[in-house]
Image (tube, rainbow, N blue to C red; front, side, top):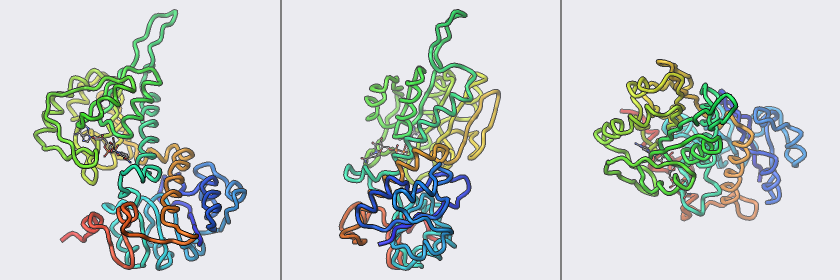
Length: 377
Ligand code: NAD
């Protein structure tokens, strides 16, 4: 069985879905592994490093993809890339069915069995395959460093001969995987951190990281599987009113709030940004799904009244080495879950296999993906 990883073709994608370490594991399981020459270059992994791990390095993606039984990628393939895949081949990547409808339809038409990591069930058994979590950790960590790099202040309290400097105040909104990592990183840098989430269940986790959990007098609603539910507009309006003073007091605000499959909730209005001190910094990790901050521009930084709102897209790709290492492990674990005796063996009674399979034998088999890619009437 041949496993292939092409070079990512999406602009500014620096990650790669296979690293030498995971290639060694796949080879130990009896699989043949190939990469396109230069596939790891943007993540600082040379062709030689792959060769040393016994990986065949192939020039160009064409033949590599045509020969592959399983293709490992980060981003959804383009339609021309899909056209290179064999019918019956397996693809594992982030597929983003909501925005990549053409690719998903093309994968179905081509007879590819495609697995989307966004749809992986978040159950304990699948934790080692959970790429959303590994990449969210990278994003949460980097968000704090981006903010620290922009802030004209120290994060820690400094006692110097020239006087004492107060620590920076950081507010993290949304304390899921990215938010908790942001809290931990800001604490390590010495900031005073507070955090807010609609799910009261995260209070203890926030406190165990040394941050204050902000409790708002609002009736919160938790959704299924530990996720947030989409809140009503009235709830969000009250939430903004109550959180306003906390935002105004902060030097740095990091927003990470998301509701799976939905537009990001608006947590910080333009007025709230204008209420912050000049020099303050906001990093909106939800920029790509509509933004938690009214002024966010996805892929750009905006400055209003001296406050910078950072809307960088694809933050995990800005730290490609470790993001790739973790992602590649997630992908290899999922692939090995699908392999028995050196061949793909699909068991659709299995919650993991069924949960994240999007296309199979010419059909879009996932109900959620089917709705997302349906042509608009
Ligand atoms: P996410 O990216 O969907 O959302 C990030 C955070 O934003 C969540 O904590 C959510 O509650 C919060 N949020 C949503 N709307 C908000 C609002 N209006 N105001 C404030 N906060 C809001 O979530 P995630 O980080 O991917 O994961 C969330 C949870 O899923 C985790 O904390 C955990 O409980 C669970 N999880 C389980 C597993 C597993 O069991 N394998 C793996 C990962 C995550």
